[in-house]
Image 1 (cartoon, protein in one colour):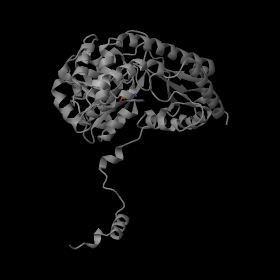
Image 2 (cartoon, helix red, strand yellow; image 1 turned 90 degrees about the vertical axis):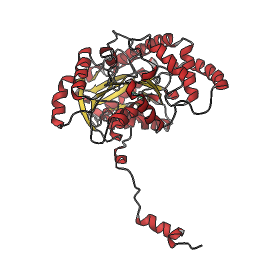
Image 3 (cartoon, helix red, strand yellow; image 1 turned 30 degrees about the vertical axis):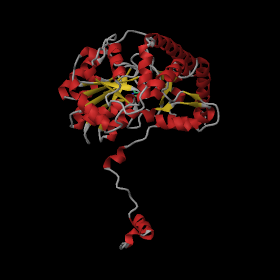
Image 4 (cartoon, protein in one colour; image 1 turned 60 degrees about the vertical axis):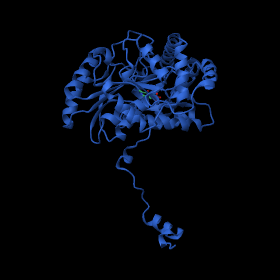
Length: 418
Ligand code: PMP
């Protein structure tokens, strides 16, 4: 047997030296990181006490941990540890159909696919609808993990300003006209938006549907917080306004109402898409974590979901009010905040003597002072909102919220006077 010289380790080193670059796909340059996610590891690595307003995590008290422990013990005795059906465990799918029948948006087995959290629903939406170069409309600010998903499929993003009634839909046609493109998808978080907490008004929902039909664009309706309304009246969802509309692609998750660690969500989309969704998911992870789906299913089957939701809505209302009260006490009108009727987040804009502070720099100071948040620019693909930040009120007790806002106020004072 003969050996060629290139088989020798010496020549391999030479080759690696002369060709140091990897054959990365063009799309690799569009894989942008998320500060929301990296803040988790950053905070975990700190040894001092930090009040955490950064992550959008449910309160520890809002997770039915004792029931989960009990259910998990039972489920693990008889659940299967093999691959499950890609579209989801039949028991969970049926329970979901039964649950949705009690809501304004009933669904059916031919429309539902269980996903690995809401994030996978967003990925599937983009996999099905976004080609490189396609125009995708996003809210500004937006949930940048969602916009990052569209970017990872090569989307061109168009950021549309928001106000207290959500995306300013009346500006959309003009903004789109400047791009000389027809939008392919509209990514919206219509209810208790992440990060601003605002809700898209009914009129704007209708107008957005009208534009989606005019353009033939899909509405990626990402709504993890809609069930967490603690004040005011429910607004009709896109599906309620336009039932069985093939242009509405709804992404949902149990992450905010039960626990994000289960990674169980679902997509509710036109039945004609189901096989494509299954094929797309097969090419990603083949099936969602099977035991976790059974734990979630058993939790729903025991009938506690409605009471649980009522309890956590009350908890989150108290926490939002506690955060607003602490902000009024320590920051007064040097900041402006949104006033959400549900969900997890307040959006805080710095004013007056604080107006020139860059919240990315503030983040470093505040972290050292023991409080964490997400700076505005991390929540806009174009890095807007230098003087704004997202605060999650959901995961801290009122006492910790008071302490955190006091620390934040100290950091702001420090920065304003140096
Ligand atoms: N969309 C929005 C608007 C979110 O806030 C989140 C979670 N932060 C997700 C999607 C992702 O949900 P999941 O954790 O279930 O993947």
